[in-house]
Amino acid sequence: MADTYFYSEAIQSGKYRSYDGNIEGTADFMLYLLSYLKAVKEKSPDSYLKIKNRPLFIAHVQRLWSAAERVLMDAKPYATENGGIYYVDQNVLDAIYSGSNISELDKLGVPHISAIHMKSAK
Picture 1 (spheres, one colour):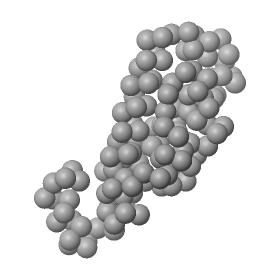
Picture 2 (cartoon, rainbow, N blue to C red):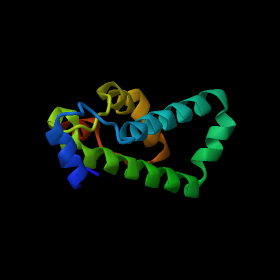
Picture 3 (cartoon, helix red, strand yellow):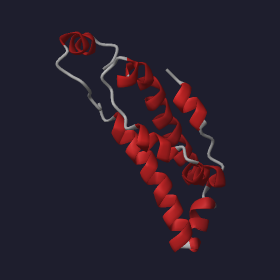
Picture 4 (cartoon, rainbow, N blue to C red):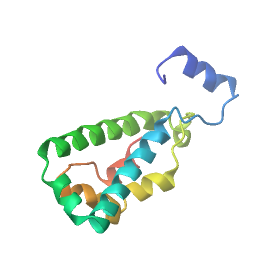
């Protein structure tokens, strides 16, 4: 949407201070996934081992995670902090990329961008 006439009109009109475009929902899902992995590892180690030992499942997590990061990165130039109207709560992003949460992907061997890269992207 950000590359459309409608977006530029919305910006120029001044009617909108922010719009999440469900980009924040993407971030919420990322945080949910990390929290789920932590909870399963703690509450049901056998289930966690099943997750960890399923290469197709891990590949699916990788596809979803990479797609979610692309959405967040593509939205950065249109974010409220860059003069746009797309809003994602920085606290959610900080929680996702905190060492204790993002390490859940590391434990499964799922590559991801770094917190520094996420913050520095404009």
